[in-house]
Image 1 (cartoon, rainbow, N blue to C red):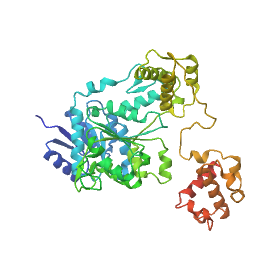
Image 2: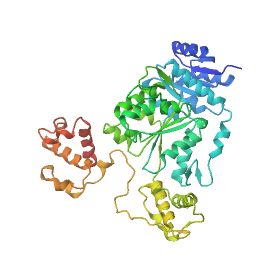
Image 3: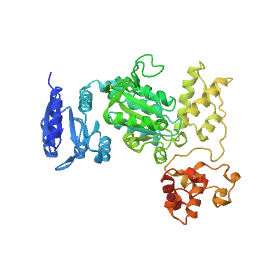
Image 4: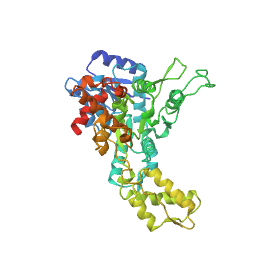
Length: 475
């Protein structure tokens, strides 16, 4: 059997020869190129299963090779330094198989090349992916044909075969896990496992074990070896739901895993290589979580290579009734009550309801109506939501841009506890910060501690003072 051809595009002779030695020892045929011109010439003369691509080359930017690529191009594995990480992220969006940060561990290099070669040689991929493609009114478990959802479907199709991490955001009930399953089902990894883990549903002291596994006797209750979610998803997709609920200590270990591709079970000194595609999700605003110190900034940028935002149900137009009809049919079959249909009044209510709980709320409302319906007509009873209770898409500093209630515009020294009723924490912080700066005649440095006032406990670092500058500009 012929050896798979690997192209190494690297202008540093020592690095290129080091990569070549490792790959040749592993059974690959290697070709070296130190410039873009040499790489283009090599690709024109020979078919390569994979290529290691440095982005900083003497005669241009390595990204140009990705932009010129087609179906016959090798699977590009970008190798970059920390300083060019943002360009590596751009490369992933152009279709790179993966990116590695210099210096690259030999085990990580070989594992990534092996995965890339396997992907190229997987001739049965098209058949596996065609089983659950788009239908007339949906896509891989989704129901809908609105412009907003079609954009989501296009993104899933474009990035499904990449190893780039995907960060899915959206309100609760919009289908974030369905998105992760669609990415897996439409990828070359569909024959391997899809493993989902809810970071908010597992206690902090057990989450590391659930994620990375443990050895027998590692802690009280560890009565047997456990491989963990990352190892169980080897070759497939690992979905980390509610990622912003993860404690900071474990975020450090997750970042290390993403950088090295190696896991270490709790209680073990042995590191193991795994090959997983990471998809994570949250219903929070991740930028706000970073700004307020609850989520590591470096981890966010490592995960947020390909962002996908799911629109709320109220912004999906005719998808609402389409979903309602399909869900009514499915739920009626589950409840063994066939031939049920929505009444005209129910359809009118469903079309105009704000659906703060999104698809999950719609499912529950329909099931309740179907189970209690006396006949075949489904009459949905919906609770009206008072104005202002429907969530809106979260953007960075939204809470600071929103106008304050009239009571919150009083000077800080004129406010008593009754005035604070109904205000959010962000609004109370705003009052305190502005008062502190005013007491210190605009001196931001002195305001950080808020003088001798008891409010000093609200500020443990400079972040709140920086927020005050935003307040001043957006006022």
